[in-house]
Image (cartoon, rainbow, N blue to C red; front, side):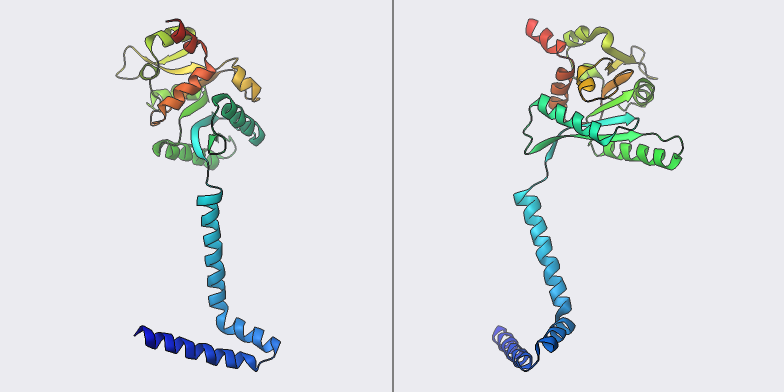
Length: 236
């Protein structure tokens, strides 16, 4: 069977070669394009796809997210977000050839209800697929999100001693079935890290997304923002 196919292919090749040999250059170009353009286009597409895959998976693979921030509530200029990501990458001493700090900006537009709704839906979808680790929001948004059980209680991440060290920086929230309340947010007012990135810190609150599984890196980031908890551990 394979011998017959090979013989047939060789015969067709010789026929095509003979046909092209007697044609002028222009006729040859026209003939090849007219009868083989699908093959040419498919071959070019296959080469592009192979080149893309080699580049993505072997030469320049995408950087893994080391930690992700949701900057929630107001528009953050691109250059400010870039500066924040770079500052955080430097501070956390990550391998910047393979890893990156990621930010997602979700903001309201009073004149565009559709945009605001789309932003909210995008945020919830990223939370659902565990692509958000830390949320930086203003106090009003924090209160709403905490009441909706969107944050992890900080007493599941920090020791009682560390929480005591943070003191008044902690924001507590009471939920319907939670009479004692839990620590869900950390006040970022006057944060040097935000100031260095030209991010407005007044009234901002840092919280841990309840769906995140990136706890080690979240703790490392909180220790960077609030070095006193590390000092407390050392002292104890």
